Image (cartoon, rainbow over all chains, first blue to last red; front, side, top):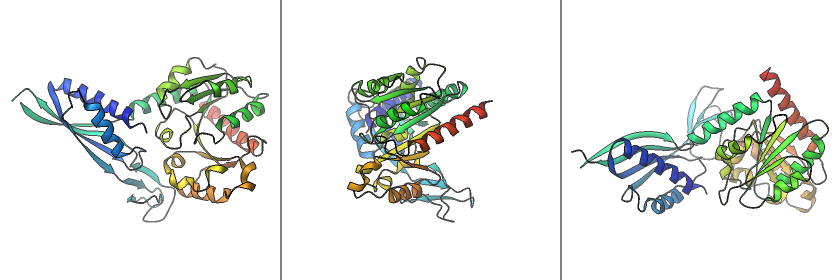
Length: 117
Length: 223
């Protein structure tokens, strides 16, 4: 439910990067969104469309990559990806697992239009 | 004109994580145990805090930061118990962020033992925001149903303890506390589980014991 404020921080990053690289426009943005990050990709898309109007990313397309939940198991030393809501080690069944991926919301990369040829 | 792709890899929650780490460091240095209470609206966070105020007042000093979308109501309830309280009204935001806590922290008396942070009533968003607390509690009241842990796993996964509240209503409801606890434990093994009726006071002493033990642990770790 806080997707709009997250998108506002995405735009802070976009503006900073565009300035750094002397870009006039941002044409694409790729976000990595963890499956357990607590945000809804569709709402991020809507928020992005609302927010981009009148900004240097007005024509930008947003791509969202869902990052699956990855667990590390201290008991068997394994690391495994879980597609379901089962937070136990797929190899040995231990529940003392640590979530190492799947909670993040990261601006992975952006595409800029620069003045230089 | 030319197109250029830039690798950014910037975490959107990084600013919050940094602010939370600074708060944690400051509170630990001051020997204060911070507790973040998260739950749906109306599950009894404020009532539990009122009960804790009565139980802790002879031996410990506490303060409360209240988060709500609007009104000073919760902070007023806590102040009526003689406990200093600050109300953060988020004006629509669905969770508290570390920066909001940081702004209030300077006003919190140095000589307290416990700082309770009552998050905005919401079982989803608060789970993603570290506030610099040492203990994160998720509350689940009996009228909400015993099937909630699996439906809202983030909140339970990120918590250190689960408090099942409103146990006085269990005789009238299809709520099985053992089922709720087992489901939460399957998501987060090691979760400490308490069952309380904050209105009647049942079970609150066990939770106080847990808090006091954590406070002593924090202070001995500091020494």
